[in-house]
Each structure stands twice: as structure tokens, then as C-alpha cells.
Length: 333
Image 1: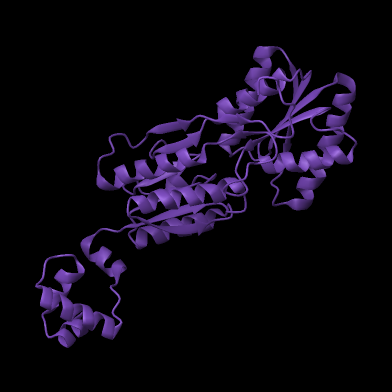
Image 2: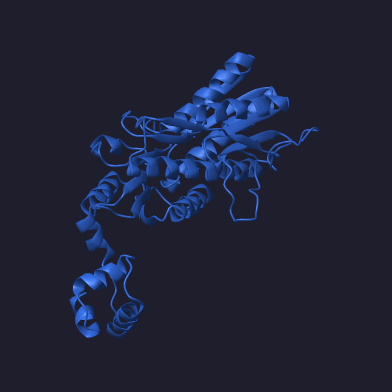
């Protein structure tokens, strides 16, 4: 800034006024602009934010972008942050707890305006309560706002849709990681609906798909059980905790001569769009990704500007059923 002031033959204060949008004489403004272009001056916004004790950067920490749900969520988070004049810093943790903590540490050290996070660990217990933070899907401390889909309602809805299609027996396939409270809520809703409806059901779990060999081995084993249940009980309904898991079961069922949906109705969870104008092919409980992102950004902005009245707010976003190729289309659909 001193070099610009010297080249333009003005004071440093004048250059600062120009950079911060304050009024300066037109002739002075023109001289400063020419000197900035000549010297290729770029303002250090990080240093300015540190000095002013403010920032317009928001850290978004999530496990991965290798799924339609997370990709779409990242798009909408960035779009709504941009509308409020924030810039997004993306941190991909790959469900690594130490990496999550390093992103939070970096955010605190860089004095970002706030953090939006998706973490299935106990990360929030290590975040200072004075840091503006919004969790998506999981927040067990009660100290920070949460925006989540209605996972329990989604489990109930999946069972209801399968029962509408005259399934005689239902199966839920969840994750073996019991720390994933949203997924446990999906199972609870499914089980409660089965019990309320007096229908028999079975519960299975699979390891993370990142453990590819173990995951595929367990899918193969469970599929053999599903085939036996179908042979015994007839028309069968299967609900998996994710769309990715449903895709694997669909492939394995076909390999075992089971028709989907004629023999086995299959519903996943997420309903993310693979491309912006393309619907997901399989039946799913769809999360309203755009509304999740909009609420997360609005709540974070309220924390940052100091208008948030309740830091422990819990906002549940309704889910819907998406009719795809893996469930029978009903007459009213």
C-alpha cells in the first residue's frame, strides 16, 4: 500500500480510503487506480480481516464429494454463501477425525467467520462454543445449531411405501457403525412402522463401502438371505440406509435371478441428482438438499452477525418419496 501511495503521490490513508470504498476526489481516485494497475497491487484480505477482527470466509467441512448428495449439497452451500457475500473454504475429511480437527484448528487460527460441518464423530465437543458453527445431520453436544433431514420420518415413509406395494416381509440394511445417529434414526423409523403395521421384518448391517472387499462380501451374504426370505414369504420389500448401498443390492439381486421390483421392491435413501437436470434412476427417500443448505447458511449468518437467539436450535427438513425404477409404480403415481 505504501508503494501505491508513493507512486500516486498521495498518502497511505488516501489509498486505504479508496480501497475501503470511502469517497476520494475523482482525480485522486484515477491516480490511485493507475498506480494499483501499474504495480499489480493485490489487497491482502486475510490481513485486513485479522486487523478488523472480521472475515468473510466460511469453512465447509464434509466427509466426501464422491456422492450425488454431497456434491449437490456443496453446490447449494456455496451458492447461498455467495448470496450473503461469504467465500467458501472447502475441507474434505474422508471421515478422518484428526483431519476434521485440523480443519477446525485452521479455521480458528485463520479467524474465519464460521464453520458448517458434516461430521459423524464427536468433533463438536472440541469446538469452542464462541465459534459460529452449524452442523448438518449430526450434533450431539446440544451446544450448536443442527440442520438435518427427518431421518426417522424417512424410515417410516420407506416402510409405508413398501407396504403400499403389498410386500409381505420387509428388510432393513443399515450401517454397522452405531455412531451414525442419522442412520440409526432411519432404522428406528422403519422398525416402528413395521411394528405399528404388524409386518415381519429383518435387520442387517453392512460395513462402510470404503472397505470394499468386506462390504461386497457382506452384500453377497445378505442377498442370499433375501433370496431365501423371498422364496418363503413371497413379495419382499428392502430399504437400505443409502442409495449407494441400494445400487449394490440391486446388482446382486439381479445376479441371483431376482427381479427388481417384480420380486423385490427396493428403496434407498438420499435421492441425490447425478446431474443438475437428471433425476436419480432408483426409488429413494429424497432429502431436500437445497433447503438444508439454505437453512444452514441462514442460521450461520445469524450467528455471525449476532441475531441468533437460540444456539441449540434443531431444524428438521421433511423428506419425500421418489418413485424410481426399483419400486412398482402405483396407479395414483
